[in-house]
Image (cartoon, rainbow over the protein chains, first blue to last red):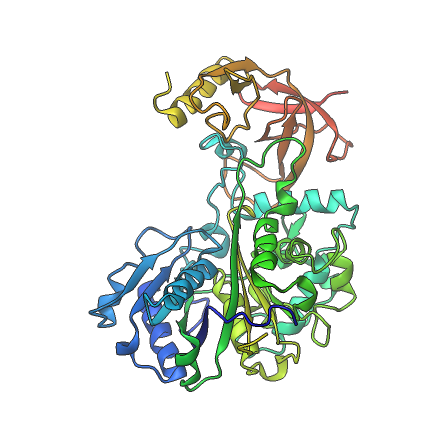
Length: 394
Length: 125
């Protein structure tokens, strides 16, 4: 592999989950505590070893659902790094990037990054009512309210329609992605949706907003996940095999609503070109993808933005089984956000850690040597990515 | 004149809109049209903006159709569209379909204000 001689920024030493459920299991603050404690137990570090805390909550959640006071809940009295970083769906990867850079430069030693979200309150909040805020696509304040452009689903459906039109793809093309993710979910112990589906089940699934059906959309849960990031040296001394973080990149678009631009088709492209330029590796070396897929379309377009598949060819590529179990580019190996659980970018990070450690059980893929992990937010406007590997040297 | 550039942009747009005029902002110096999300010309950030009325000619860029209802104000099914004005900027609106006509990206549209004073688009032909 190229990229030889570069050393990783840091490594993920610990991974912890709270309970994940569709029922009321606690507040984000409660669940974050559980996930952080579980992450320390996972790798054998003590809470007193942690000197950095990075918080991520959903941009749809009320402010301060995950307050800086969480540090006090955990008895953290002397932190060297603390923050709540908000770039919507890119936040988790951006937080891990932030932590890793601090560790690499000696400003922090052991940083825990946590995401907690409680979108579901039975009888009060459902998945669609939690995520029904209107997204300002035009740039004219609350302009979209009058047209009823609700949820993330509407704006993303518009992007998917543009994609299907541009490449003259059939109405069911995105269904291949949902089917492939479900194949992975069936092999995972944590995934929420495990009944097998095929393309006809996809076609029978109810439309939410055309072209999206229910099976194109993420499956929300209540829960929290934490990862512990530390130096490569320290990670080697812990109970779990380290997952090394070799490269990070971000890319953010704006003002894309102008003729000749296709904002729906190229938003991750900035992050992708930064990632390849900075890492010294290229798309041909990526063996596995753990992508932020709020909707099927986001997974599909990620493959193209990173040059893993030619423009317009992803749905054929997926239909041919390349991203499914046994394929040469395993993708979203716990079922992703669609069939696994939607924890806003921490889902792909957790899947990368599990696969990087070779702890995927029935869903473990041998193609785990270089894992692309992405975070994507806004309407494909905010993007962050990292390259993870079980190997310290690529 | 350059005070509160974000707020005054929205206020000026709205003032024209209430008079049933769809307007565009452009740089007072180079006259380049700005996207609706932008508040200044990057090359001439200290120039005043000029407002001009859009021709109303447009193309359908992308659209989606809601099939489940999020609000009683918007009974389903209904279409939300990203429309591209011939001057360049895109904005969200809706397209009133003629029966039997399928919406298609790239089709020609023209702007209208409906009885409620809201901007909508109809097929140009």
